Image (tube, rainbow, N blue to C red):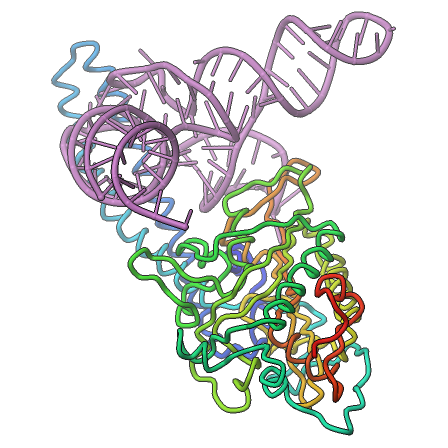
Length: 423
RNA sequence: GGUGAGGUGGGAGAGAGGCCGAAUCCACUAGUUUGCUAAACUGGCAUACGUAGUUAAUACGUAUCGAGGGUUCGAAUCCCUCCCUCACCGCCA
């Protein structure tokens, strides 16, 4: 959520940012400014009335103590009138506050100055790339065929148990999954991230804090009996650990990593996009989250990008890093780098990580703050990234490292997987 | 799920209609004292919104004692609803 102060001081900046993000409803800015002005005028009236009632009440108490009952009764009448008026004002004020809030949450975050202009994924900027396309000239099978060949994943069985998009990993497939999770978590903790294992369901306040709510509830599974949402990413429970917290300076920066299953309804997808592991309703992911001083959050973002890049390199996959253009960025991000790996048999790029700086957009909702050097309380910047999302990594590992005789396991993973090939 | 006891500042914990944004202790912090450290003493120490001020320091106002309603001139305190915590019982991996 954008801070309301920004609307009073820098309306032009907001309009520019919204245009870059390809946001259409620019009238909302003027609407918010108008509501804010009316709200503040009413706030003054409300406070003044409350102040007069408070001081009159004090006087009544003193008069009663002195036994001047008649005077006290007179004052009660005056107070009664003020309270009547105060009630009306408070009602309108509350309505305005709600309207302001409801409007404010509709506006996306401001894009960073380095975000490229553009509306579609084609206009994302390739920052750099690495690895090379494997030579699979002889035979190249897509991962779903390899999964069947080596009995790694049973898609039909998952459909029976639950439904489409809930694959069952079996045998070496399940083991590969576990190996990747352990490898990723170790890699992160060695870089100074503290490991946590959060709840996989969250309440409404948490979903609101990281901006899944309002408006995006359709993307999450919902346990209506209890009012809980299945998490779409560990970002939600992990970042919300610091909701309503003023972080002691000694604990900054906060660096956390967590493994979790992720649940996404992904309504409306079809065709080759959902074939095999390309897009599923439940998948595993290891996430990194940082809460940092705003002064250096962009250095931290670069550091996180490098961190994820080295991880991808260690798996021997061909990858590229994209700086997302304004129109393709998420609602709450200020700057996002997407990581894509090349799926050599499908001959297409698959997104496996997204690393973003949200600046204060989430923390303003969550009230996650710290005390800066001068003792002033201010919002921290929140950042997160996947390191990594498993299914598409598995898809690319299978496809890119396949040989006629089996699938080669990258060296870094061998200690976790226990052998050098799947066969 | 049942019964009982509770939810007060960073922590512990008093307060039981007005003198309470809240005693006291601890933590933290500034200072005095002091060969150093420690101790002692003195002061400071919640958050949000608003008004004035330079988008400052600061001053003032309002709100906040789990959340939301109610009673009252006045509520941390009384009443109602909900949430949560703890203990015991039931159930259970």
